[in-house]
Image (cartoon, rainbow, N blue to C red; front, side, top):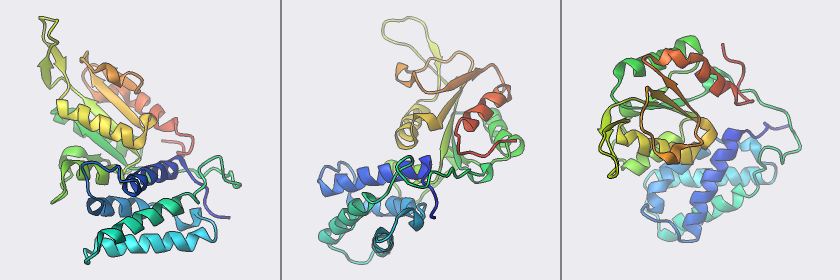
Length: 259
């Protein structure tokens, strides 16, 4: 019996199908198929071939090998790229998502293998405290820090695509770094750094609403579009919401019990 699909693998397949279909249907905007090869291959490497039943498994490995070849930068025609994405789209139709497979065993995830990225503003103290909280108290793997991730030669969308392919959850540390007001109000209100809002939207779209947690310092003005995303406020120190963070991860029924 092969491994059961998980919410993570389901999300990966959904993303890959969206990318492949956009190339096949010529609806891709703003990014060339060539630029998508690396992030697609990164996602393919996260999928266990055993998730695909015979005879789809050898086909999956052949598609993956073709993207490996395309990644090397060898001369390739547009038709070759198109065929690679077409084959990818076809093979993904053989994947059976959680709830559709005959083997309904639940694969528990070890907290030490869960990958989290922290989106943040200028509050260095709480950023370091949040990182320490995840590693020391919750016994999770060291999180990625958004500002520390340098990907030479990658555009901003490409950077987001690659980072999103490497993580399972995103925590957004929203602190009063800016001020602003609407045209209808005379009063300035504390706001989070604007870039963090863009980053939240990106990871929300990639990981899903249930895998994003907002940690909000004091009374910040937040966009109404963020309503529905889980958030918790703290007054001064992010440690005030430790149990809320623990509960956020524990809500994923496939995550082994946290310390």
